[in-house]
Amino acid sequence: MQLPKFILGDNTDYPNAIYVIHTEFPRFIINLEDDDVEWFEDFDEEDEKELSAETENMIKLASEFYDREISMYEE
Image (cartoon, rainbow, N blue to C red; front, side):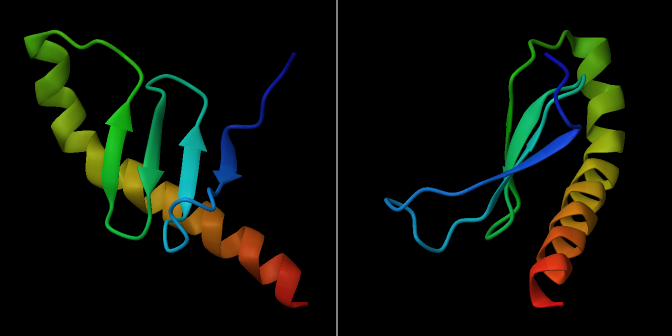
């Protein structure tokens, strides 16, 4: 099965949370309510240095995906 790069998610137990799931490496889920990121990968020390530099870009891409998806509902 081929998955899209980003998937929107929600949960009624967390009504204010908006989740974006990134399905490609490095896989993660971000809660756009507070920008909390949960990584689905195990990283070594060297990876973590590179990852910290890339995290801001990942959050930006997830937010842009969300904005694009929501704009389609508003049309």
